[in-house]
Every structure is written in C-alpha cells, then in structure tokens.
Amino acid sequence: MGKNEGSKGVVRIGRHAGVGSIALVVGASAALGLLFAGPVAEVLDGLDVELGGAEWVVGFLGAGVVFAGIILLCLTLAYGTVHWNPQKGTARLGRREVPVSSITVAWRSVSSSDLNGAAYLVYRFVSTEGASVRVLVAGRPVRGLDAEGLGALTRFVAELPLEAPADTAVDAAGLTEQQRAAAVSLTSGGGKSRVGRDTLLAELAELMGAAPGASTDPAYPAVTDPAYPAGPDPIAPQNPAPGTISRARAAELEREWQADDESAVALLLAEPAPARTVRRIFFWLIAAALAVAAFAIVAAVIGETIGGGFLPSDTNEIVGLLVLGAGGVALLFYLVWCAAADTDVRNRRRLALRWRDEADPGTRTRGLPLLLLAAWGEHPRRLSTAASFLSLFVGLLAALAAIVLFTDDEFPLLAPVLALLGGVALLALGIVGFVRVQRRRRTDAEELVLLGGWRVVPPEVRD
Image 1: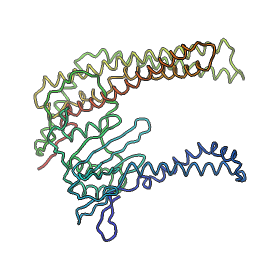
Image 2: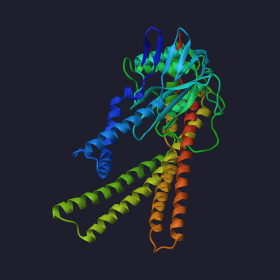
Image 3: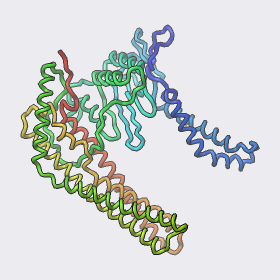
Image 4: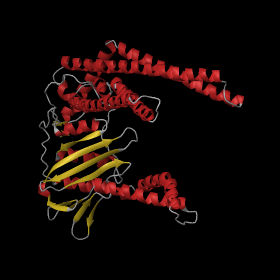
C-alpha cells in the first residue's frame, strides 16, 4: 500500500502484513483454536468455572483469539512501513524520522519453503543514523504490496543514494551485486544480499508488470535443489557484468545463443552417458519394489474384507515380510539411484565445462547453453542428503530407545548411556550433513550465475 496521508504529502509505503492477509490469520487462528479447544475446556472444567456446558466453545474462542494476537504480533515485529515525505526529503523508518540522503544501504532478502510453498521478498532499508525497516514487498501466503504500493516504493527507491555499484565485484566469489541477488534467488531456501538502486528498480518494474492493480507474489527465478559437491572452483576469474547493449547486438546475441544450443545438443547426443542409463533402470526398479509392497497391502485388505475378519497369523507374516522386504529393497535401490544420479549430474557438468573451454571466448560472457546449464539446476548431492536423513532418523530412534531403557531396570545403566551417546552422535552427523549440503547449494547458485552469464543476468537493451 502506498498512499498520501492528509495534507502533509506523506506517502506511506507498506501496510500491516496481518491486515493484508486477514483471511489467512483468521483461518490459522481458527485451526489452532480447534486444536487447543479441548485442553483449554478441560482446564476450565478443572477450575470449576460455571459456563453452562459451553466450555469447549469458550476454549475454542479463547485459544483462537490468543493465537490471532500472537500471529499479528509476529507479523508486526517482522515487517514495518516507510512514511516518506518527498517535500521535506525525510522518511520515517519504523519510529525514527531520518533524511532520505542518509539511507545508503539496502538489503534484499528472499525466503522460500519447498514444504508449504511459502515465498517472500523483503527489502530492508538502513540509514547511517541507525534506523532501519523491513518492507514486505511480495509474498505468499502473507501478501505484500499491491500495485499502488509498488509504485510508491519505486519512486522512493529512485530517490535513495544507495551505495552498491552494479558493475564491480563485491564478494570473494567475484559476483556483482546484481549477480549476487540472482544467486540468492536461485538458492533453495533463499538468502539475502546487499543491492543497489538499479537492481531494486529493475525488480520493482518486473513486479509491477507482473501484477497490475493487484497484490503480487514473488516473481523471481527458481531452480530445483541447486547443490554441488565441494572441490576446486572450475570457473575462470572472468566476471561478465550485465552492461548495456544495442538492439542490433541483442539480435546477434539471440543468433549466437541458438548456435550454442545446437552445438550443445550435438555434444550431448555424441557423448555416452552410462550413469544416466543406470539412473533410469533403478528408477523403474524402485517403482517395481514399491508396487510389490502396495500390492501386498491391498491384497491383505481385500482378504480381510472378504473373510470378514483378520488374516491367519502365517498369512500376516507373509504380508509383513513382503512389505518390509520390498520396502528395504526399494531403499537400497534408491541409494543406488542417488549415486547414479549424482554421477550423471557431475558428468554433465564436466562436459559443460569442457564445451566452454573449447568454444569461443565469447561464451563466458553470453553464458552456457541452456541444456548444459541445466546440470547446475539439479541436486548432485542426493546420496549425501539421503545419508544425512538416515543418520537423523536412526539417531532419533536411538535417543528414544535410550529414554525407554533408562526406565527399565532389566538393562544395565551402560546400555541406555551408550544408546543416548550414539543417538546424539548420529543426530549431530545428520545436522552437519544437511548444513554442508545447504552451503554447497549456495555455492552452486553462485556458479550457475557466473556460468550462465547473460542468460541468467541479461544485459539492458537500448536503442
């Protein structure tokens, strides 16, 4: 939301995130109220509060109101508003009013979740006088700015003296701030980066064009599970900055991209890919093993339904063996598939780098062909991820077993202690494994941006 306040000419940028998503707040509060209505009703009944049998209703309403307040408070603390006075050249960031000329730093944050589909784009403006504010620009399910608010934010950003040059490397990876912003968007889970005025204005223009007159969801590119193994950086120190090109050069660039894509297709067709074949074979083996387990379960249910009772014990044992055996085989096949998939992705990456080294030097600026660049859009650490998950799962089981053993006098004290230590160690290994994978995903996104060149961060086209 962006609007003028009275005759003061003050433009308000942003709104209370809870008010903009009141249906979501009410729905979430109602769901939590239903979940906690019973326990609250029991507490009220234990306190001998006379409610005429309406304890559950009171518990539902009370829990819903409390959770609604908590959600609104969290949204209030997370996101703020900017009150900008163009005539005075000042802006109120949160509760402090500062000169617009003092707002020299802007951070762009992207957060996303593959589990629930949530995604948020947030700008944080920082003044040299210490004030700062986070503005929710776009998001789902909590909604950000509408078209009017995006327009007001665009005008505000255009007045800021942000200190972030667009054409110089700003970090150890050799990324410009525009490329860093792209890498953050390409990283699974998101991240944040310091950005300049031109980057923000370009993104805001894209957001306004994507949703005229309506609230906008984040419109930034995404690559599924980017992650790659640690190793020497294969990228040369060249850093293709976005720059500006003419329309004639843009047309020529399209032809060059098409020629690069055709060359990549020919290379992929000529190159043997045994790992890809193994990957496909084990995919179907996994499907077959799971089908056996599903068939055994369905057959058991049908048998009990027709027989009007439980299956005989020996039949139950056979069904259990089929389900557990097929599930175990499917797990082993999955681990083999992970290893084959990881090998396939790494082979395609090596092939892409070889193509780049053999091609003309201009490919480092215009970027890898899309078919070759797609190898950086896959997750080549599936086996490590699976091992981390198994480590967490077994560690949790061991920790729970230790708790049970502590309460059983039949076992010596050493048994639960060893189980607990082993469980904690496995949990730690699993957490470390997931952290390493996430770090490599961020590094992989950086490499994708550098290798993608103008395909990922296209140049500006002017007459």
